[in-house]
Image: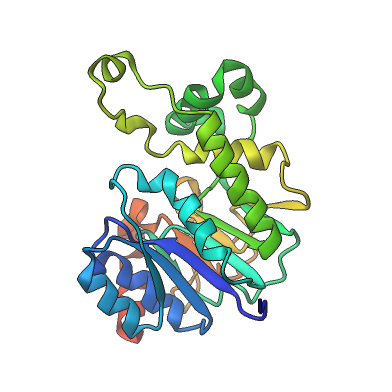
Length: 270
């Protein structure tokens, strides 16, 4: 198996072609290696978009509310057939790229990117950890800074290790549904993002060797929701505290008014 290529791996399952086109078009300005998406067999327009931009895809049968947790098993299916140099696993709908995500000297075998808030101060992250790992583990993790599960960069071996850990923890530490959902055998949608809890547990407990954590304010990837300072350079690139443009901008939709001019500029270029 060759390992000369890098890989960006994500999911477009449940989205429209329009929702992921900005991600793909902004990335293809800088990056020529492999991009791999999970899609639904019904996603005809997405297939056309992916083929046009030389992206690969795996068709998966899954309920739209289950894809967030099941995607990691599907990623492992993809990775067992091809070895890569470095891998970026990321979300798709709320991300755009300002540079090639691999043209950076990452410190870790696996690299996590922190937000600007403690886990205990975010009601969503607090709930996910409490409902999966319980009060004891929440207390141990509560003062840690939120680790974003939507952007992770690793070498091939470490990404495999991380994905297998996620798969194991998702199966072992299931989200505890509220009573009304247990009694009526319905889905508890509040648990849909609980892979965040598993990522934070794995990351902050250093379960993958040679992990490295980047701060939101001066790292290479911005997670915008809790980012306190939104600053742009003359080219309308979002920049960190060192005035260096971020490689990736994640969750820009949470502060869309601040990003309108940047989005218009990029859309003209692509």
